[in-house]
Image 1 (cartoon, rainbow, N blue to C red):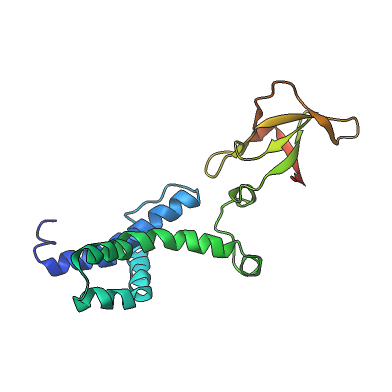
Image 2: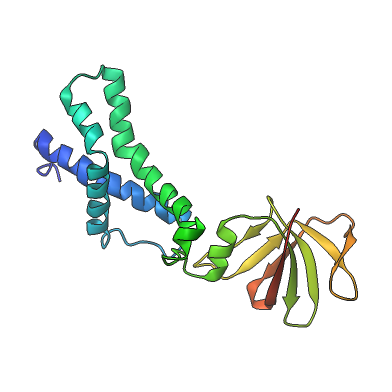
Length: 196
């Protein structure tokens, strides 16, 4: 390993063509849950994403190489090139992917519909139909949580609400509710209603 970085040139190539892609993959894996990535098999992915970062920011690299930047700005620009933008690419991609006109044209990055639906963290009134024919009504909002792949489906609703005999919500919350945690193996279906 020491021989690999004997010259500044090889160290610079490593920094430019591996580190940004590695950061992009790590941030993407944090944002889109899935099976653990084997980075020994993702070396070419890291280099490819680093190359895309290099091409997209070639104009900024030209400014850095011009030597006209004061030292503090040079370091800040290198941080943006090697860490800031590589971390921002997955966030930008996922935000763009949520746009309706794009979402209709490309596949979801999530492994399950469950993950894709709950990734937005949109608040809903929820009625959970259990396999034993019971129904639980509640509020899915800021403190609520739904598991992500590869974990099995589970949902925590921060408030439990009473349901009437027709299966609709009443105007009363269950006294002293601290929410309910339901295992996916017990769920038959979920109904969602817009939260105002």
